[in-house]
Length: 75
Image (cartoon, rainbow, N blue to C red; front, side, top):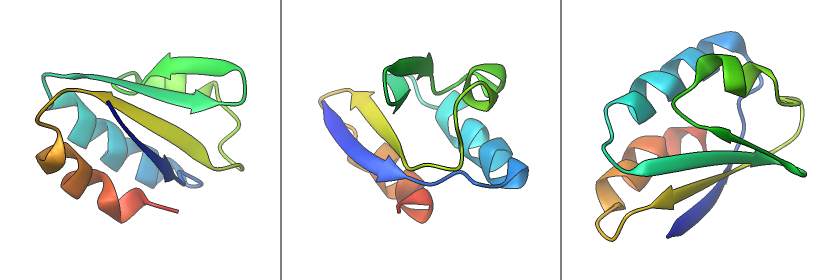
């Protein structure tokens, strides 16, 4: 598992983030406080408080390519 902190303060960034995560075969979760949603779900992401930093958890042994793609969202 790999974890990183990101920021998705604008709707356009959420759309770009989901476009990246939907192309990944591994499980990716997005956490905000006690809430956890599927990072491939745009509705789930919009249910979170996007004004605060979010934690992405990627569950894969070979996730370096996913981390590289998500680096532009890093906080």
